[in-house]
Image 1 (cartoon, rainbow, N blue to C red):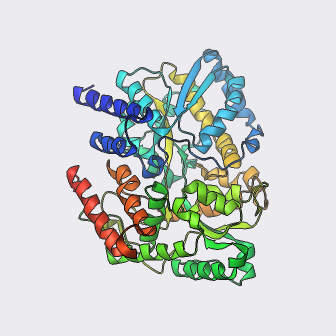
Image 2: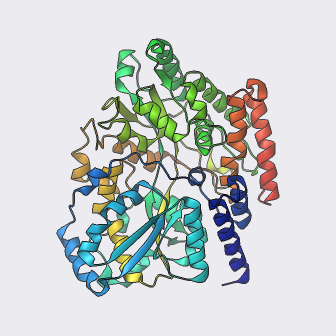
Image 3: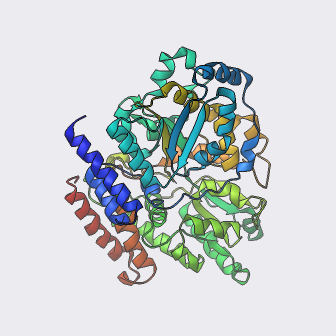
Length: 507
């Protein structure tokens, strides 16, 4: 290992530990990660220092349907490793939470004990970095934010190659081709190598209350203009019932606001950066998107400007809003048995047009303008594991067709595998209106396969997306500055962001 890399790792570890202990601000931590050249996807950065919310129902994961050939394989392959303990550290993603509930099944089959340590994301980064720095093998499996894929590529084992090299430990029917190709390419591939296996993919879709749209004779919106018209009409007609057309995750200084904003920008033909690597969120198309968003705020609960995804989820579950373009993993909870509007929410493809999406040739830093905002992660086999074969058995089990399907049933989030969408256990729940519904998943798959959008990929992006952009947007939306002018606000953001990019010598 080069001394330069060793120093960089120390810097990452020290910064993460300082942030965890309250000795460093989130802004400074993200800035330090940018200096170190370590990305954190902006979605994950929005969760730093706090647990990720979970909107599923773990009870649905308890139906043990392990295929007999897989169970027999695990019993036999696990014999040499009985009594071994493998360790995995992760933030509280939906699949991690559910695997923590299911891991005893793996232990019963193999005799291999599994310890899953769930901590905030910055601690995941610190622990993984310390592990690879000393090649300690403390953790056998790493959770990797999609922005860490390149950083940890040298420290992980390509699962495709390992599967081929270890036929005695190759789970029957594992089927790498079954993993969603867009997720493999966007989350876990680097330089021709699979760094890990796709694990989690939050993504934007359109969700709407079918009862309210039917009541007011409104067709399901397909464009941003359709959505605005419907939002205004419902807010007006349902004012006496304290129901709003939509609700937002527009808290000042929080990444959730940046998510809403970036989707509005893309949807109106804009982008965050131009091909010249300068901020382009202040051009005509982007400003039009922000003005569209500001109009939505007028037809949303007042709490929108203090809400992140948690607050927006509560708006949907309580029946306070009629529509939202937001995270698809909200949907099962909004339809759950304890929701005040059980069975009334439906899902549609994300809003499109009439603007034309900006081409990837006309943007910078790998940004992909599209209709469905995403975030994601993978899990990977550590090159330094002292129990690498036992860990490999667990990784295959955790990402197998059966377990990934059961994780989806419990959490309602997007499956990583194509076969999950046609699994009988998924299909049989497509007509459910309450807890455990899967009637949204066909739309989720279409969105992933066809219109998945990605924010820029550069080390300082997480800091910008969690600080400069949502902070200035918050000042605009709450009337603190800019006099209601979207253009003035975005011109200031352009100055701030371009300065950060120049300081990092990325422009």
